[in-house]
Length: 370
Ligand SMILES: C[S@@+](CC[C@H](N)C(=O)[O-])C[C@H]1O[C@@H](n2cnc3c(N)ncnc32)[C@H](O)[C@@H]1O
Image (cartoon, rainbow, N blue to C red):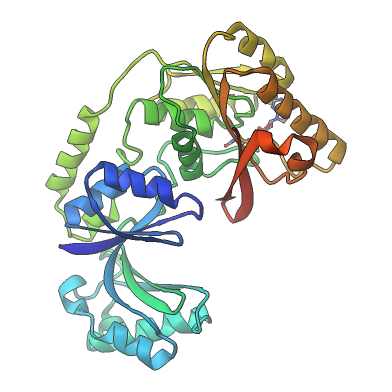
């Protein structure tokens, strides 16, 4: 049994935890942006294949509380049996993150970690063979607890294979999936994004509805790292393909700008949801029309309105209109994500509840009609 960590954006921990629990994998701990779980390498490969909200899967090589000087860090790394883990000559990359910890100078943390690994391996650095798979070791310090982690995802999991190009302010794919999962949409009702830009939210919604594994078409570093065979990975992917299902979904995206349509259609096609997402060029104020037609239906709105526009007047108008849409459509539920804090002033506070999230590094809030 091994211990793994799935890193996740702040605010999405509960969603990531549910994703892992749903597959009957045992969670050990959920802390700030980290879900620790137990299993074998097949479990880690499945998390890589299926996690919609995670950033990266790591194998825990070592961990210890109260690492407050570099000597302690050196010896924590030095006792790990790297010879067993890393094929001789493989290039080793060290990275570091420090949160609320005594050791905070990340370049020094990185170089101490690397020195300790190389000493442990008897100095094979000089023989690094660029043709061998690279190994990335992350030293993560959180409240003085150090974790030495081996990256089993390589590229971050939010970088979906389907995304060619995005619009000006695309939402991170893993966050888009997180919003859909948080909304509680159960697939039968119409799903709507009225500021859909490059369609990230509708595409992720359709992939969730059809149970398409977000990483079906990706080559994993876990394969390159030889912890799981190519054959086993192919079996896991074949198994995942069988779990896909189809239904007559009603997923709509509208945006005032149609510049992204061609690229987004290709993205939707590559994601396997070409037939499931409908797009129309439309000013969101006119979106009220289909809403009224669906008056008798319960429907779900998940959207990412513009923010940070230069004209405050525009912003106020946009957000007052969003408030109107929520109030005048009693059957509507869902969320919008933004960093426009003035919304609390222009809307009735007790009509919404709020949750803090991050889009890339930007702090945002998710407002939900109560
Ligand atoms: C923050 S971006 C949404 C990005 C999108 N979630 C994505 O991942 O690409 C806001 C979007 O609102 C659109 N927009 C601005 N004013 C609008 C209006 N009056 N009606 C509809 N869409 C509008 C912009 O064209 C832009 O695509």
